[in-house]
Image 1 (cartoon, rainbow over the protein chains, first blue to last red):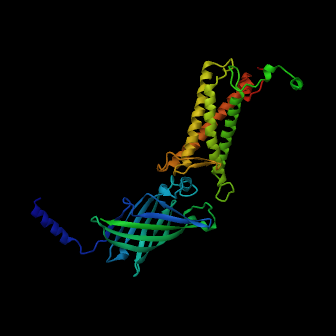
Image 2 (cartoon, helix red, strand yellow):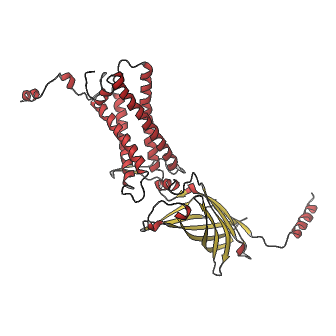
Length: 192
Length: 204
C-alpha cells in the first residue's frame, strides 16, 4: 500500500467511526510501584496492624466527560501478603486465613461508579476473596491527574472500604475488635 | 578414712563399675550415652511441641511462648548435635554386636548418618522460617542468633513445608531405629540396647 493510499484509507476509517468519546484506559502502575493495596486491622483493640499485598495487577477506564462509565478491575496474588513479619505472613497464607494454595487470587471488579462534585466518588463492585464473592462499596477520592515528566499521562485515586472477614469465610478468632478490616487501595494508572 | 569409705556398701568387681567417659571398643562411654538420650528426648519433645503449638489459637496462653521455647531449644539442640558429632569423630565407635551381618551393619551405619544429616536439615529449615524477614532468633532471651539468608519470596512457606515433612521423616526413622533396638534386645538378645543405656547385664 502506498503512503497516499494508506492516508486515504486511514481517513475514511476515521470518518466511519461513530462519533463517540471512548473512555481512556489506564494500566495501574505496579511496575513503578505507584499503587498499593493495603489493609489494616486492629490488634486486640489496642493498635492498628498494617499489611499489604505486594503483587497485583489491574486497569481502569475513566472518561472525564462521563465519569459514571468508569470501571476498574484488579487481580491480587494472595501469596504476596506482607505484614513485615515472616511467621505471621506464613500464618496469613495458611488455611486459617487466606489459604493461598487453594485461593491464589483475589479480585475486584467494579459494577458502578458515581462521582460527587467535591472530587469524591462511590465505587461499587464485587470483591472475591478466599473463594467468596461479595459486593462492596468503596469510598473513593480522586487524588489527581495530568502529564508526568516523562511523556506519559497519569491519574490516581484512593479508595477505602471495610470488610468483615467472616463474610469471606475467614473465621479464625482474632478477637472482637478484629472482626473487620479496612482496605486501602491507592492506585495510579498510566493512560494507554 | 579412705579405707572405710572404699569398703562401704556391697562391693562387686571394680571392672564392672568403672564408668568410662570415653567410648571403648566394647562399650559406649557415659558422654556418648548421655548425648544420645538427650538428643532423643529433645527431638521427640520438639516434635510434639511443634505439632501442638501450630494448632494453638490466638487466645491461647501458650500462643506466643510455645514457638519461642521451640526455637530456643532447637538452637540448643543444634549446638548439642555439633558437640555430639565431634565427640563421635574423636572417639572410637564400639564394635557391633557379634551376630550382626555386614549388610545390617552398613544399613545401621547409613541410617545413623542419615539421621544426623536430616536433623541438621530440619534445624536449618526451622531457622530459615524464623529468620526469613531478617530478624534474629532469641534463645531464651540470652543468645541472639542472627539471620543469614533472608528476604527470598515465600521463603518462610517453603522452609515451613520442608521443616514439617523432614520432622515426619525423622520421627519415622527414629521409630524404626527404636523398634530395631527393641528387636535386638528381645529377639536377638544382644547388648545393642543395654550398652546405649549405659548398663551392664549378664550379657556383658
